[in-house]
Image (cartoon, rainbow, N blue to C red):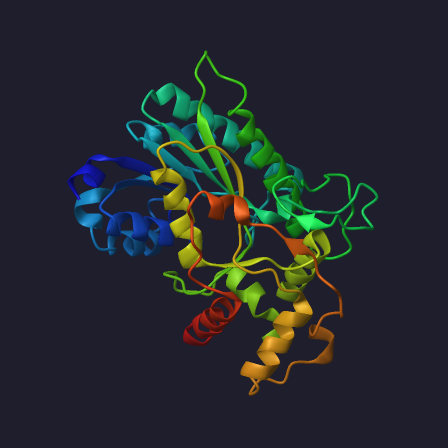
Length: 338
């Protein structure tokens, strides 16, 4: 543990769904973690992180808001690796417009990348991206390319029929922010080149440390409980990507750490273990959760789906541990528990 304990890593958005699980796993592996939260007076979130094993000696909390990206520089100072997990959210009572969400995501990436360079200690920035940014839609927005892979980018001018305004703003923000992050692999700042990895994750499911069901987990089983609002998120994903790539929270966080522990790594990598359609997910739920009466309108349409190539990350040596069945089962268990 000695080497890991002397290695400081930063996790932005440390109290979120992915962020908190990532902090937990980093502490378990012996790393010293700088985690950021929007508000250090939020005792629920602070208490959650401070209760993690190893937190008493190897966790330092910092207050930083994605809408004030300059605040992150204090947490980044002295770290060797930075995980930028935080993303602008539109919560109840929020006054932030869709345009402000997009601008905050881009300026946040830019400010954090430049803070990494200014620190003179950060070797690599790992950005938690979304596969919503990798749509295989053709330019006309009506057809799909033959395969979903790292070469695809979601067009920012396509008008999607599903999802609410925030979901569409989130899709655009993650697309433009990921492109901004990758720019630092090509364009040095003050003659310094930062290694940047973007990990474009599918819909994340499984368990949680949070005292409530995370939105992505609720979207995962939305058709099972017949909830139209979150089912819209599922339909948006299928519209954007031709299917619903899914991945377990354990694999997501293991993939982040894998990208950190490689001696050298940069570029864009998709992260999803399976690629079902909404109809295939519904069929699994009907066969394995028969106590729920799933309305026909939540079954999804019969469609072929699309080929999915996640071999780039696997060829680097990463192995997925959880398949679609385990992802869906653990998501339902999480929902029942909470």
